[in-house]
Length: 583
Ligand code: ADP
Image (cartoon, rainbow, N blue to C red; front, side, top):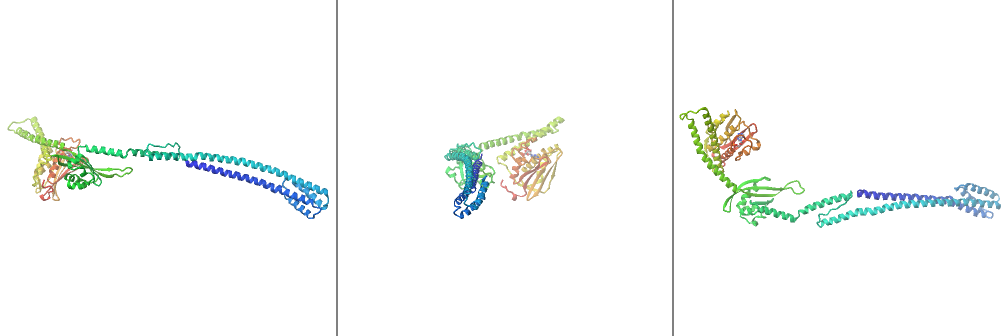
């Protein structure tokens, strides 16, 4: 039972009992009063009148007023008849008194009147005794009932007195003890109130609080410091440089590798604003320029070439925003950034070796491929001899494979140029038509093979400021892709138009199209759309991008999956438009 209900019930019961006690006592006091009143009014007055009549009777012969006194008291007695038989005796007194009035000297009459009055007095005396007995009985009953009710009240009050204070005080005492224990950092302390009242709820809340405090105490300062040391050691043992800054760009930590490559000491770095350090340190300047430029929340990744320890090293710079959600809150909060420099020198060295190898191999392939092509031409020469149908077919297929080999070798050579940064761009005003014609011609036999028409929209006079060889390569590659990824009996549209001092070229096909998720990836090196059945190296578009951008142009694609793709690139019309002319 809830304490509130218990208190209400106990005090309410006590209140009711006190009310009942008051009512019973009142009732009996009233009854006793009525009984005594009865005696006083009914019998005591009669005795008084009788006494007055007896006194008057004594002096009736000598005193003439005695007759009147007697008569007055007799009249009063007549009006105060209350007991059984009293009326008859009073009548008798009246009768004898009227006879005595006529003969006042009659002693016999006087004595019979005295006898009547005595009888009257006896009757009332008896009544008094009887009524006094009744009042006694009433008093006895009142004593019993009042005592019982009083005892009941006492009992209940006693029970409440014994139970209630201890029922309230004991849990409070236990709770106080527990709070003292918690204050003394004994977070294991719990209270155990079995009851289902307010103290039960209080115990539950207290225990939850103690549990949370216990959990919180587990993460106390020494543990936090230990954890911090552990993380610092971890970061220090990393082979890559790591620098951490807070939300105000103050350096929080920098590991040994970071100190080594920046050539700074810990005191020059930790606790200082990174932009202040950047003023005197080139490397830090290069590292932090992105912090102030970058968009919030984005991971930035960039390559960095650093000359340290007497050799060139390559690092991939990554800047990570650190956001946390503070306890009890829902909004995430920016608390700083981590700058990581991943040492990619070994990969770079391997990459260089691979590029060199690819360059050598593809270069070495060119001579045998050319001699295969020459031999094929000789084989086709009628002067040497006629070939039968099978031999012709064989020669045709060797020709196709040789062309493919040549294309791949060309792509590999180009990519080695791109990777080693040795693209030679020869920009000059170049007529567009020959470029497009070359590209269309190069793809003619492949297009004919798939019965694909190449629709060219040209204009004889247009000139572009470009490297015609590289642009022709790009155009050839785009048309080659369009042919390879189109269905038979389709049309490829090759167009160009003048737009804002630029020429915009486009190659549109109605082939399988490219899924939106791959649209940006297809320009990356070695990327091929997963599941693409046509053979290829995944290099064509990335080389095209490098070639076009090296000429100050842009390349992009519009494609709808299942409908077709249109590749665009722009080139400048005149040298003064060049953005990257120095390239
Ligand atoms: P690949 O040698 O594989 O053709 P590319 O760099 O030229 O390499 O093209 C990259 C990828 O882009 C291809 O694997 C192909 O899936 C997709 N792609 C290129 N051109 C087209 C096109 N016209 N239609 C559909 N997909 C294309």
